[in-house]
Image (cartoon, rainbow, N blue to C red; front, side):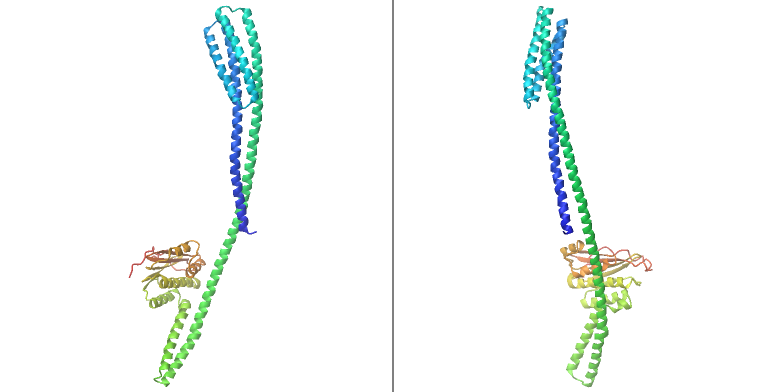
Length: 452
């Protein structure tokens, strides 16, 4: 299986696990909140039962204290307590609506509470009427105690039932928390492992791409080198072989013309040989200028710029410091080819009326800047050049590869008023050229030339 396919499968699986983890987290949190709600509900029932028990016990105590002392404050406290009992019982009933057994206990508790309140009311009435006797109050007390015992038993049973529910619900909540933690932890762990493996595959693919790109750059550099060698060889062959043959043929034809004066065909052939010889020399020079090997970059550039200006009828301004120490055959050739391609593009595509060429030298850099006042480069071509190199011509791609193989950069700025091409290369360390104050480290900012 291809690495890219594996990467997509792993990434999709990890993403799916994260989505499932999110959905599982929502469900788990919802269930845990529900379990917590029931735990809180059970504790509310326990609190309500405790309040009922407290109110009934307080009512019994205040009744006994009032009967013994006749204090009206105790009577008011008893009445207030009795008035709160129905509300407390109603709270218990409302909280246990989901539990039929507890509802039955609430019915029994309501009945016994009403009987006990009735007995306490009879005891207080005896006290208020002055007919309270020890025997009568004792009989009431005995009946009240019997009811209290039954009420305590019901409350205890309801409390035990709620305690069992509380323990069950707490256990259920813990189980859900444990399950949620295990599920989410496992899902995130597996997803993390998948992402790590996916990241390793991506790194491998990236490394492979970088190696392929590096190999492609080396291959491009090798192709450019071979092409330059072939152009140098063809140039030499044209100059030394074909050029010499044409020159020899021209000499013999001239001698023949002297022996046959007035022969128009001989003069016409001589003119054709002159043109063929001139075109052969021009082609030889364009393939590889001999001055580049013999006299260096400065002489080759000046001769090429002069010849280009005459052939294209485009005025060219050359700003070049003198003298230029040798920069190395490969770097000089790269700069010359960039200059050659840049001027060719100006002549073929820009419609410019003039051009300016600037060489800038510093201690660490060699910078070539070519500017024109033409119509500029198409936006899609310029965008492709700045992004991934797609949709650009062979010339631009070749220039960039030439500069890249020396660790340099090729920049292009363009708008409808002109184009500026800048090639910057690191200067060879062996070069001993002193820094020139007049030459900046980089060319002047891009300013389109005014129309001529």
